[in-house]
Length: 180
Image (cartoon, rainbow, N blue to C red; front, side, top):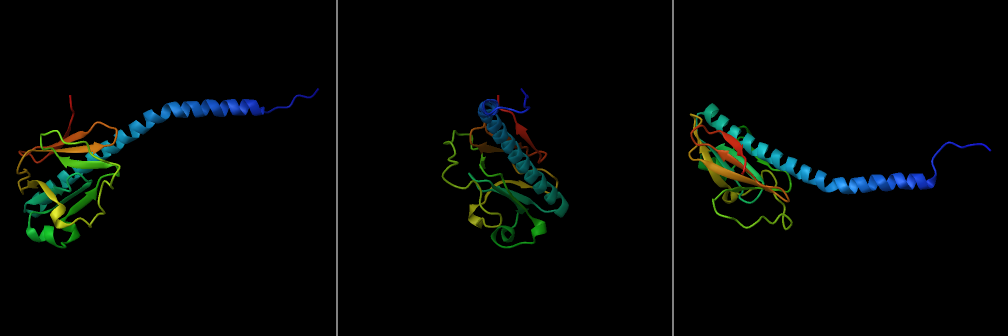
């Protein structure tokens, strides 16, 4: 009797079943990790916008405003002049960005807000399509590098603990604050 090398159908089904079971067990952990990484990436984007607003204020020698669309994922830094916020300006004078889909940014008012509804709408508007009245100023940066006030911005994502970005007025710098 001659022996054949290879696998039986039963062996192949068992291997596929074990792989599927392991993937099903790992999925919740991996999806939570991915959402957490997305939120950390969004916090880095916010910190970049803060740094850009501060840098441009120092470089241009005029105040720069950092604004967000509260409850959405849009942020912008541009000169603290009415014409920069009501009409078109030279793109080199501004920094506009959006957070990853599924992440929103809110100015921390100190009160307990209702949880964000991520399923009913897009979390950011298209870049360049935000109306002047939708921007909410969170800080103004001066040519000496400082900001006009201390500000806390909260990045929220579905199924992950929010991250708070603190802007320090005295230095105009930002950092992610760890909640206890």
